[in-house]
Amino acid sequence: MVQVAKIGHAGFKTPDVEAMLAYYTEILGFTLTERGSDGAVYLSCAVDHHTIILYPSTESGHNHFAFQIDSSQTLKQAAKQLRDAGIQVEQKTDAQPGIPELLEFCDPEGHTLQLYSTIQQVSHGFRETAIVPEKLGHVAMYVHDVHKCVDFYQNMLGFRVSDWLEDSFVFMRCNQDHHTMNFLQSKQQKMFHIAFQLRDWAHIQTACDFLVRHNITPLWGPVRHGIGHNIATYHKDPDKNIVELFTEIDIMLNEVGYFEPRPWHEDFPQRPKVWKDTPQAVAHWGGLPPKELME
Image (tube, rainbow, N blue to C red):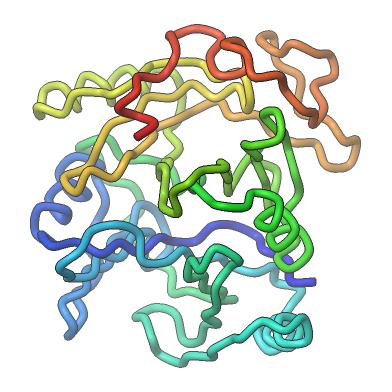
């Protein structure tokens, strides 16, 4: 089984690269690291060469998601394990600046995934202006078959289930963070939202003020979720992709099987479970999501 260590980057198609570039650099505070000969733009928020890739296109939406594998495995070993399971894998060299080699394949919903073992490190660190997240935290997807996704990400990529909301919404982790990938049963097949981690509650507050000063109205939040217990706020980027900014997400103590205890937990200890579909599961405080968020 492949063991994913973290979510590395996300690629987006966009009909207006410059508008999205301005959003990621002037609002979120990413750093432009490179422009490709094909017009693609590579942006970093910390030490990896890129966290976001913007591809010129006539369409908008996600293009792919990429994961860095655990250092105990090689990319060759990962490719063999996937192929032995009947998955078609394409091995690419120098397909992206900063990543010498990667694997590309699709999940059961047809979404393109990439795996890599190494990526170039950049030395610029964190900027001092704009919002400046700490990292790319997670991605949530609308899918046709949530159970097939759980089986694939669990048995092929080493993810583990953190929590369920009834039988239709699952939160999966690849490391200690409560969730890296979320899958929501739906008639649609598309990204629900992408999420970036901020330092703390004060950072959420200043981020909301910053968004409003730049004429970006939050869709929802701040709110403290029940599942995962993260404090979050949601808004849309120029292409109408939903972006979550969050902090204080639950941390799994994998050795003992429960989440690091915190005062706002319902259970002591707080273990992975199936939550009932109640307002408390969605939000401890901050209200329920507007319809616009769930379109």
